[in-house]
Length: 151
Image 1: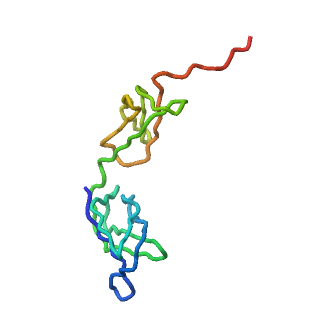
Image 2: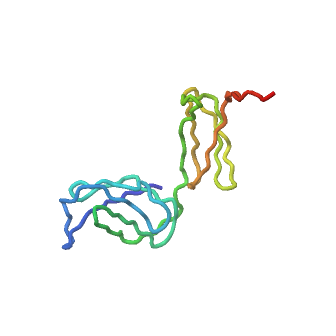
Image 3: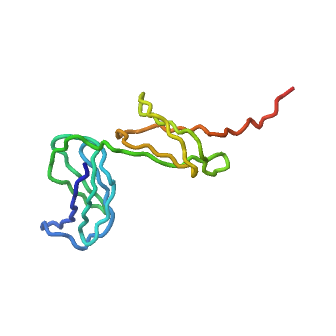
């Protein structure tokens, strides 16, 4: 479930540092946070679609950039991201997009049902558990072996 985060750069007196403009990296004390970066303008930014891929108690968000860093108050997260997706294009040996290719997806020992690329070579998987997947594709029209046999 996405949630809102307001990031505010503060000076040593606890006041908003309106002169702070720039990118900060975001991280969490558990799992991965998305987005991983934010851009502050006049010392603040509001992110309306923040997600964590893991749950936990006493979770804190951290922001750092331009030699400064800060940590949020702790909060609890139940569940986690459960609607990850993956998409892309399959290209053949000529680097053109390929229709009808079969795309395979695997998370550890878990095999996801394959997808087939559309007419534009596009594929997508949805409702995936968060994680690091292995992706492979098989051409609908494999290139024949160009090597000549030795007689």
